[in-house]
Length: 155
Image 1 (cartoon, one colour):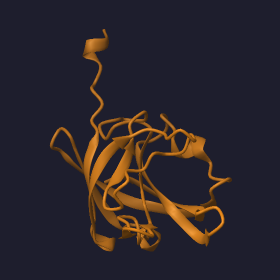
Image 2 (cartoon, rainbow, N blue to C red; image 1 turned 90 degrees about the horizontal axis):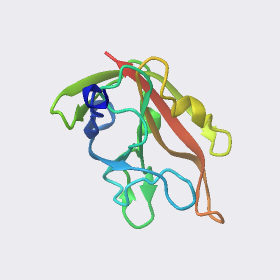
Image 3 (tube, helix red, strand yellow; image 1 turned 60 degrees about the vertical axis):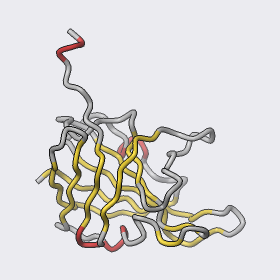
Image 4 (cartoon, helix red, strand yellow; image 1 turned 30 degrees about the vertical axis):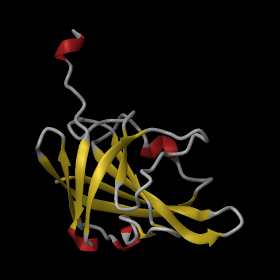
């Protein structure tokens, strides 16, 4: 029965000691352009609420945040590109349980080339995917050219 299914547990707090991040995580979807709707405050990050929650036994829990903002300065993910293999992070779920993760990859893609199906997958081993902007800033377009993607697995 549907009532017997495990409820989705949203992440509510993200801590990444290696880059001095402690951020509130808000559930988000997509904006009218079909882009990931990152919270307006650069200090907060957004969890893709249409994907797996932190309790999921499979798939990618996606959290995105701003690298910076002309008005607000450095964002929560300003130093995401500095994360390295084996760096640790924790995510506290709405259920009060803190889950630990270990970084296994950091990649950079042109925004037009990022393999979204891979990062937003609902299958495969459970993992945490952190996304922010990177690369050169395109003044005409008003945004960064690339995305930085960090993948972490449960410890």
